[in-house]
Image (cartoon, rainbow, N blue to C red; front, side, top):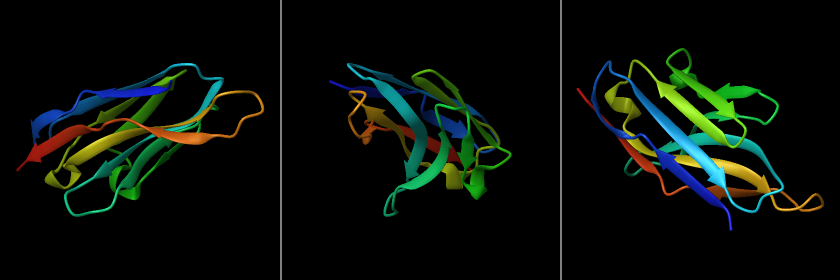
Length: 119
């Protein structure tokens, strides 16, 4: 069974920083792309940042220069600086996992961690 567990959310004032972490565990052959998505109330879930197993990263335009994603095997961190109220939302960790050498990748999600930025 695969588990995706996030941590590190909270309440912070505008201009502050938070660091989110996510760990994937379980009976897995490989973990490919991992990433963070966020969902504000009434909105769809949007990509924030991703990191491939090869070290490539990708960011939403709205967070470039403020957020940094880092990866260490099956763990990713998201360092968030210069937070604004628009960054408020439920942040989900996603992992593209494969259970066997001949299996297909499928996406696994965490439960989400709340980030609230006050003005």
